[in-house]
Image 1: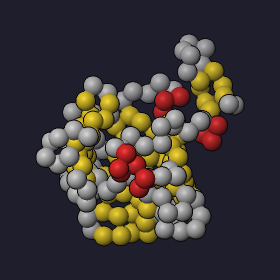
Image 2: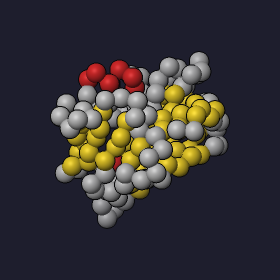
Image 3: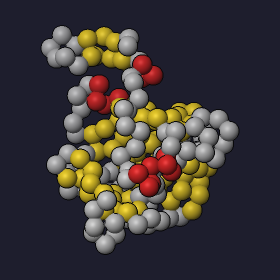
Length: 164
């Protein structure tokens, strides 16, 4: 990995984003939902610098892949910036075709569920940024799934509260 080191910490000063290895576990979803994001590759850029207040991922969606199940956060804001390709953004308002240079933000607490889907024949690459506010809950209106950020990790439940 090509990087410049910061002498005062063990974190690098700068890295080439594509040199950051993909996240080891492709999906945190319970097994029955993980196939829906199969092929998605996340490079956790923020982790390289020891960032703890927010996460930054360089994400690649091959043709047919989705960014996530359609979801909405109660406390965590999210932001995306499209670098390559033309994904479809799906929200409560419907479907919107995005293009390189476009960005979108998802304010916590609105209940407006969202996801990206690559319905094209070429890869989509985008930056995603999200904060790590404790006590966040996530709703998935299209699925029997809910999530809660507990002790630094996501925990998944059926909508009736039973854990997966």
